[in-house]
Image (cartoon, rainbow, N blue to C red; front, side, top):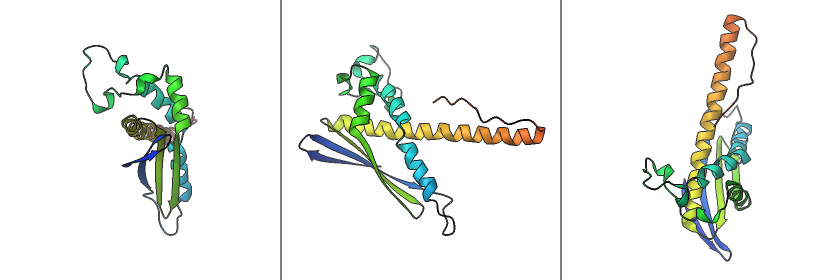
Length: 169
C-alpha cells in the first residue's frame, strides 16, 4: 500500500491505502456484500488484539541481548517502549486507528488511518497491521478450506458433519 504523512496540530496522521478486488465479480453478480464483509474482517477488533500482542513483543527492551534478526517482521520498533502492557497498546490502537472504505464495481478502496506523535512508529504499526490482517485472512481461508474438505469427505463416507473447528492464529 501507499503511506502518507499528514501533520496535524495534535501530531501526525499516517495512512495506508489498500485496494481489494473481488475475483468473482461480474456485471450480473454484484460483489458488494463480499467486499463489505472483507472490509469488516480488516476492521476486526480481533486483529487489533493480535497486533497489540505481537507489537508489544517487538519493544526494544523485550528482545534478549544478542537476539538474532531473522526477518524484518521481528525487528524492534522504537516508540513502543511507552506502553506498559499489551492491553495499553491495544487500547491506544483502538483509540487511534480508524478505517475508511468505498466499495463499488468489484473493488474496495480502503484507507487505514493512525494518529500519534511519532510518524516512524505509526508507519511501522500500520505495516504490521496489514501483515497481521493478511495472516489472519490466510488462517480464515485455511479453516474454511478444511471445513469444506470435511464436508466432502463426510458426504463420501456418509458421516455427520461438524463446523466446529477451533481456529488458532
